[in-house]
Length: 450
Image (cartoon, rainbow, N blue to C red; front, side, top):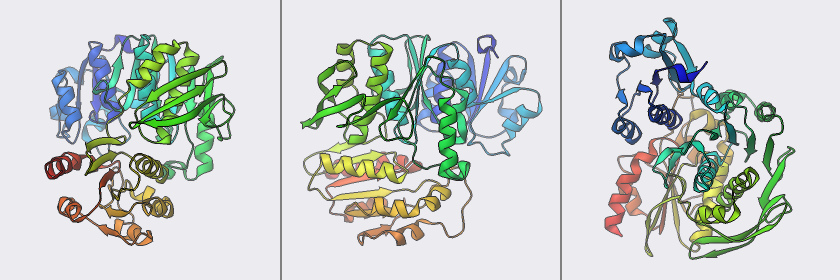
């Protein structure tokens, strides 16, 4: 299918982070874009500001006549849309070309030099860093991000179409629609077992993704993964390795050993060794692409991060408030490492909203260990997302597994009051559900208090 010949693009679930990036892309390329989502958010508001028409009631009557022309309309949907969605079923039953988000991304990237970032953790931050590095080096790129970049206040970076930088999502095997020139794998920890069944099946799918790399392409892998490629790591013997790490005024200063030379005194502002690792692989891919070293160094130092990835909302001597998207035990461990490194000797309160009943069930013991590391813990109810409840799998059940005695269940209605009762000097909100909607309330309440 040649997307250049299509005029109308209709999105079912337009407010999703990946879907909205595609909507921005098509709007920027002068397509007629519209869509449906069940909830009005900051993301949908920003699309409306760009001229995209969006409605929030699932009804075929809300679809404008021009988008009911099957010859000139492509419909894009997210797997998160329920099977009984009236609009999606209308398009499927009336002969429209109906594609998953990942299929459209595959079509966009197939004629470009594609750099794809895969892995169960770190995809969004790494993709954002890589997009920023290459933009600052004036590469003719389009970067599709899985989060809102602080540098661009967008999940899309546009500077041309010869190069694409994409987040290669393993959920629902979506990344198998891509055929990248360069690909990296940041991690292969078990996740999405509702899709894969077990960890070995998920690893097999990553191996299938590797086979999609174009002839003469390159694979980059974190040192220690059971894969062959250009390796990267922290203070080890990888092909690309971070060395001589120091922290100066909350900023990492370090050297990078490459296969050909050492880049000295690089600076990076995001906390946590996991973010150093993300920066390293983005740098390695940009170096191998051919970006100039000095421009890369300047770009790395100017990178500001992704919203909801260890985002500071309050940072005073008396109180620190950080919000993070972490929703897997290993991601929570990474957040814990970062906060302890950057704020040693301070009492830390973590407010966590589990994401998905299945993930909570599959990794309950690991969640219990990761969450027990904080000085104080508050648990919100499980965010269901696309799932129906699983009998017996609740936040109360998870709380019972956590060895930390300073723990409690909280609700959104009493959250602010419960935080006020804490003596913590560092507040963390963690999770991939709608806990992000609480951030503005917490920030407002405790900015006044601090």
